[in-house]
Structure formats: C-alpha cells, structure tokens
Length: 474
Image (cartoon, rainbow, N blue to C red; front, side):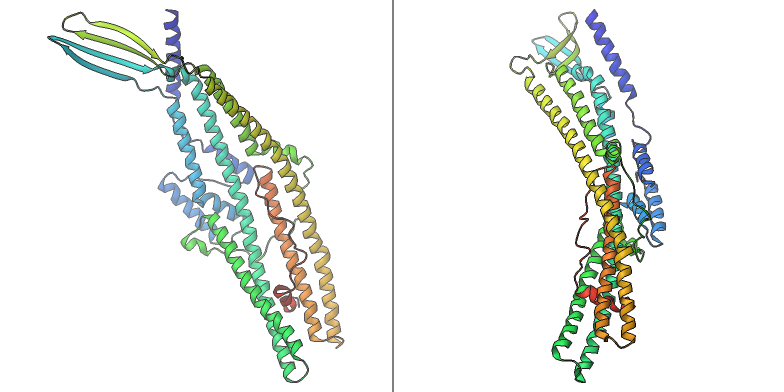
C-alpha cells in the first residue's frame, strides 16, 4: 500500500506539471527585447504573422529614406535581417520541446482475441510509460534551463549582428571617402600629365620628366579602380547585414565618418565589467549547470531503461473475467548503466572546462579590445592634432614660395601629394578607431570579432592616392 501511495503521489505531481506545460504569450521573446533595449537601445521584432512583417517593412522603409546613420543601420539590421529572424524561430522550436517535455505520455491500449476450440478469449490492456512519468519532475526543469540558454544564445546573436553592422557601416562610409579622394587624385594627376606633355612639346621638359608625371596618372587610374571596387564590396557587405533587397538597396550613406570623440572611454575595471555582462560566459556557465543536472538524472535512472505500468482485463466465455496489473522492465544483467554515467561525468567535466576557458578568453579579449581602442584613439588624435595641421602649414608655406616664383609648379604638386597622403592616413586612422569602438562594445557583452587595428595607416603608398590630393588640398 505504501508503494502504491508513493506511486500515486508521483503520478499526481506529474499531472500537476503537465497542467502547467503551456506556451507563453510571447514565446520567450521578451527577454531578447529587453536585452536589445538595455544594451543597444534598439527595438527588435519577431515577424510571426504577415501583419508583423508589414510593420517591419514600413519601419525599415522610413529609416532608409534618409542618409543612413550608424544607429539607423543597426536598427534596420535588427528588424530586417532574415538570418536573425531565423534565430528567433529557434525560440519557438525550443519552447515547443519544453512544453512537450511537460506533458504526460499518451497511454497505450491493447486488445487481443484468441480461440481454442469453442473457447474464445478476449484480452484488453491499458499501459503507461512509468519511466517517463517518474522522470518528468526532473526533465521539466532541465528543458526549462535549455530554453533559457536558447534565449541567451538568441540575445547574443542580436548583439553580434549589431556589432557587425556597425563595423560594416564604418567600412562602407570610409570606402566612400576613399573613392572621393581617389578621383581627386586622378584629376590632379591628369592635370600634371597634361602640363608635362605641353612642357615637353616646347622643350622645357625631357622624356624622363614627362614619363615620371605620366606614371602618376597611370597609378591614379588604378587607385580609382581599386577604391571603387572596395566601395562596392563594403556596401554589399552592409547590404547583406541590413537584409536589404530590391529598392531598399538604394539607401544613401553620409559623406564622411563621425568626428573623433573629445576623450576616450575610461574603463579601469574593464575585466570585471566583462565578466558581469558577457553573455557567452553566462551561456557556458549555464551549459555546465545543465550538464550537472543531467548527470543527476542519469544516476537516478540508470537502472530503469524501460519501465511500464499497465492494467489488464482478460475475459473468456469459459471462465470468469481475469483482472490485474503488471509492471515490465529490463533486468540489468549485462548493462548496469555505468557506461552512461561515465559518459555523463566526462561531458560534465568538458562543460566545466569550456566554461573556465570562456572566462579566460573573455578577460583576454576585453583587455585586447580596450588597449586596441585606446591605441586607435591616440593614433587618430595624433593625426588630427599634429600630422595634418603640420602638413597643411608646410603646404601653405610652399604655396607662398610658388607665388613668389621660388619653386615651380611640379614642386608644389609634389608637396600637395604629401599633404593628401596625410589626409588619407587620418581618415584611415579614424576608420580604425570606430572599428575598435565596435570591437570594445562587443567585447563587453559577447565574443568579439577583432579587427586588424594596427595596419600601416601612417604610411600609405605614395602612388595614386597621394598624387591626387594636390589639387584637393588647395
């Protein structure tokens, strides 16, 4: 009687859990919305109906009507990127599995009819998977934790898309500036070539001098081609992240990158901040916790592989009706479940070490991102405050000397090429700073994709791009 009472309590608890197994109104999407608002200040929408999709398209089209700022680009990507919408669907898939785990298994019914001479025997049976019923109080919380882990993973996808979109926007705008300067370089180089050609015709230039100036024009033409292709690639990368197609691809971008901030961010406790906010570290810790819970479940049920409880009722036209119940299970004669327990323990230790490695990597990544950010800021500020003004001062002095006929036009053009090289370097340094800013923001919340911060920005080629800025500088 005591065992039957215990079994009744277990069945009652399972029935109670199954009564609570239902779908949430928002499919668990509210946690993703809160993350996007708290960490990005942006909206996300899950297009589960055509009406939702229509609202998204209306909002996206409004944002794309004006020159696309970096914040608007992030907002468009969070609304319009179909890959992100696909990750939202993972919430629905996981929630369905959680609900399924909380529902009672369907009972089975068996019916049999047999004859022996004139004797007819009818057998009826009703059975229930008792092992699954007993495991429900443990599997339900495990599935709930897995759903929470899925929510964190989807939220991290939102943050990753935002960071990638910021970097793509920076690269696209910088590429547009590079094209503009490359075309100015080409115009200046063409003018220099034409002047050299005329001076050769009147005998004031030899072939070597003319060929040297003509080589600048040839290099400038290559520079324009490379810059235009880089611009197209950067824009298409941004287009893909925005999820734009058709008329949406005709969006416009600002003419130049935002100015350098007045001062860099001061983050003395950057590691502690990252440990408190990094969603990948939290996900790794949650995975280890879930594995530990699974290990407890494995130890509890290792002797119960197939356990069914059923009732039966046999009737015959020759004997009274037979009633009773039966329990069936596997006998652990050959497999005592030790292999499954050993596997679960190994998986748990694997999850623990992965969580520890995630924390180590997070600390290193955020340190690298912050030092890269500070270095990029210092380099960009040095270009803005020191190199570009000095080049401008030198150019102004040379212009005075040219007006006083102390130097010639080609010397003036050579100096202007040096000046425009410094302008291009300053633009590149500013681009790297904004990429470093995006990397730092991501490193504080999730795993960043580090940019190559310290390219040779201070020493651009003296070919096509430097040659051209001569005219643009004046």
